[in-house]
Image (cartoon, rainbow, N blue to C red; front, side):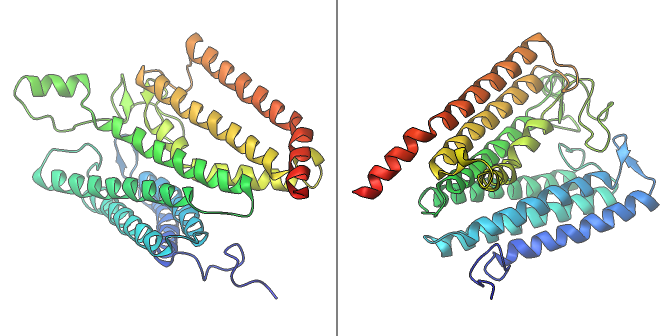
Length: 327
């Protein structure tokens, strides 16, 4: 009989408001796909249903992962429930306002300060985003005090939530005025928009298919996207190493796997920094210069060398574990 207390087997122990949020995102995803087929309206040179689709997929994945993480808590479960509930409420309201603003009002959401209604909606969305940021930070703190049986998975959960928090923090850089907007403010005017996704070019220019990331200038959505999905990537790395351990004895020790997870987590953090640096210089992800390529190559070499070293330390780790068991 399946273990009903195992969160990987049943959803019963998962955080219900987050599961409801994930279900709502699945429904929005289906509606958005239909909208892309039957509604030919565009906004900022992109199909009007594309942003709701992207948000539904990203937030749905995030909600499922966070619901699972909260089911692993043994200490602070009640606090964790409230953190997850506030997160679900804040992000749920934000997504609802995205649909209202874009689909029903036919207006842009982010950075739009054109009318009092636009300002109000932006302020509410910002409040929901900051609440989500703070709740994720609180979950990071809770995870620091949890004891999990697999040390590699424990490290993956902590690194993943920390990286997601960093990805949220990067998004705050989008809400600084562009040079053109600042010039309007300096002249005593009020710009219709305040902040931008792109750096060095106007939003709405040429971009990658579906993702929409600028191919002409920097785009802060890239490090934001990579960062927040560290919450899914790092646990997947830990599970992948656990599966590989069945074929490769070098990975049989959870201490070795934990070191590999930490190495990958540090490399992932370096990637977020690299992508942020590239975007802030107004450089497109598809047109890296020599400095960007050099930094990327250096990061890859350091991560690879650290991973090789972690695996080669296996015998020393196993000997230490045997001695500890003997005592």
